[in-house]
Image (cartoon, rainbow, N blue to C red):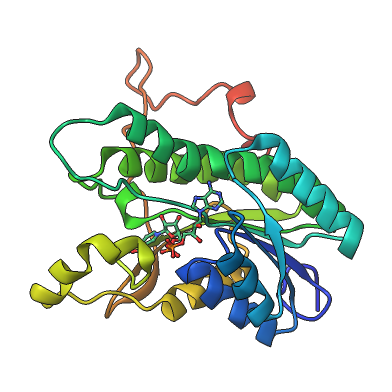
Length: 267
Ligand SMILES: NC(=O)c1ccc[n+]([C@@H]2O[C@H](COP(=O)([O-])OP(=O)(O)OC[C@H]3O[C@@H](n4cnc5c(N)ncnc54)[C@H](O)[C@@H]3O)[C@@H](O)[C@H]2O)c1
């Protein structure tokens, strides 16, 4: 097994690990004999979930920048390496009113976007020291197709996708692939508030297991900056971003971006 393959000897961190996707992913990684550290908010239920899955539990609030760094240092100290970081913790707005609740907006962005940024910054040097590996960010379809009912979530997930694509070249240069997965609605606690509406409309939702399969594929495929859409009845599809119109110079020719602004891989 190489470091880029989930298997015996590799070590993975999952934030929001006690949630629906986290549990399904942890189970599949454990079946491959990956050492899994489940990081989540501190409560007895979360500790028990980790124990039942044969995973180590780590207390982590992803909005605590220092705590992200300390956790990665501890994993490296205990296990000698970190091969993959699944930055998966997330919440959605509890209300969906016309009023824009700024407190709630900021809370969602803090967890769903800055939690990802802090996690990636903390994991990067450790994964590099392990010889390269993967950072897989759980974004959402809402990051590509904004939800009118949840502006904070849409901004955070859109930002997470932009972060992944922007970070990809520099991480690829050191052997780490950062990717984003964008599931449609899936059957976990996060949709508890709106689950009835899907049932009433006969709208299909994904299972956590389907999403977990895509999360493992994202690590294995190792495609820098890839963004995968996962939809019920469709499966996992790499999302193709539409390019933007290129600038033109005075002669009407396509202008080339200054070299210093291009990632090293494109120079
Ligand atoms: N279920 C869906 O429909 C769906 C669709 C697309 C994307 N997602 C995303 O998938 C990810 C996982 O969600 P899920 O569906 O498993 O829901 P979930 O509610 O079951 O799990 C989310 C987990 O994140 C944890 N968490 C929340 N705030 C945290 C914090 N500050 N620090 C650390 N952990 C924290 C929760 O305790 C929980 O265990 C989220 O980022 C979510 O936005 C979910």
